[in-house]
Amino acid sequence: MRELEHEKDIIASAVEGDEHAYLSLLNSYKPRIFSYVLRTIRNYHDAEEITLDTFVRCFKSLKSFDRSKTFSTWIYTIAHNLTIDFLRKSRKHYEHLDDRPADEMEIADTKTKEPATDYDKQVKLSKIEQAMLQLAPIDREIVILFHKEEKTYQEISTILKIPETTIKTRLHRARLKLKELCTG
Image (cartoon, rainbow, N blue to C red; front, side, top):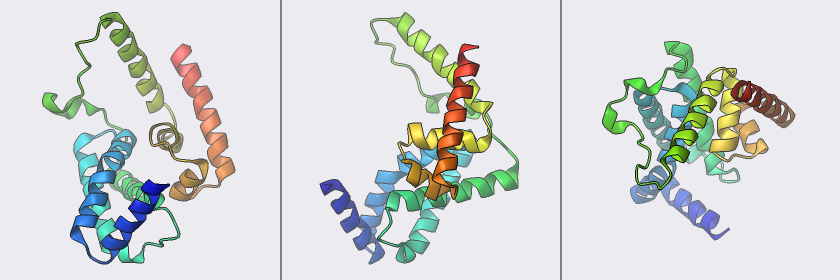
């Protein structure tokens, strides 16, 4: 609760033009927004660009932010809209990350005591990733927002402009399909 109040104070300062407050918001939300966009479009460099555009748009329209709403939902909505615009324009739907330089790829911890467990975990993650690619784009986005970004049904509904009941139904069906694809 205290953290939320602190964030509201930072937002209020940012709205009034405090650059340090805006940078604080940027540093807090940039990794989460980038992760969300990257998981959605599957291209590292385009995700960086969309993330930057999200914060530029956020900065330009910060004065119009309705403080009765959550900042998190607002900025995710901006990121979602820019991501959809990008996908419509480029038609580069869901590319693999293989075009990233090797130094930008995540490397598994090699200091683990049980390498077989790490390998098994990587295989499972790879299966899940491949299964995610077979979901409809909207279902994949719902799964990412719910499980990775830990958004509530209400927040997802606001971000995607879809009724909560539809979110619940699509999430349930996506989970079933993922289970089927990963086990079958």
